[in-house]
Length: 239
Image (cartoon, rainbow, N blue to C red; front, side):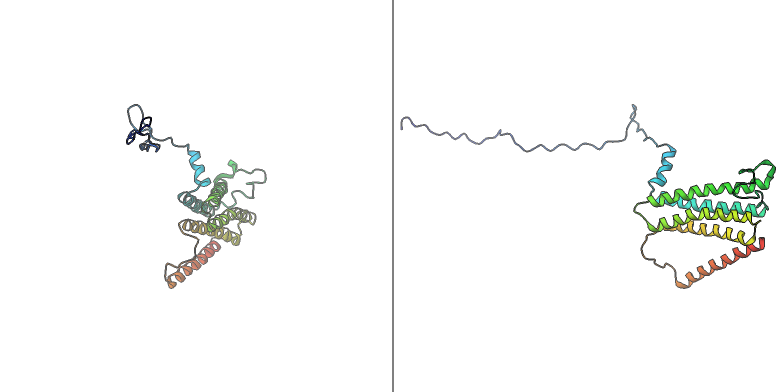
């Protein structure tokens, strides 16, 4: 009819803009820094004191084990130097304690070789104390927390000053053989605690599981008892 308008179908729309985001192309992982010649530049190594700090302030299992081994080494070392004091008859090279003489805390040339040996053994106690304290810090900050590690490390940290006091009593009692024996046995106990700490680092805190037959276990305990008797008799005979 005249005056009417016919609707015209526009047909399919083929250029309509899509609203979906275009996926970004994956970016390559950043590589190590390189110099102008294209050679990789090694990363900056932290200073030694920061690396040493990390071993006990942020200890890994390897770092914790390292400090435990260090505790074994220094405690064996002080047994060796104590034996040198005993065999060289330098126990009274410093005739009093905690000072070396009534007037000096350090050894004087007049004390001779005996004084130097005894004083050197005393000074090693400070190294032992420093190592076990750092071991205790590492055990306390080790994650996840391990009660067994903290217990053994705490026993070591308390045992060292006790050992020093027993050493002082040894000097003040003019090398009484009973006190000398106690002094040595205390060192042996500290070595045993340190060795046990090394073993416990790689073990869990679960129930104890026996790995050897019962007779072998009793044989090991028997050897331990006989060894303690031999150490005791050796200290008495030497005295």
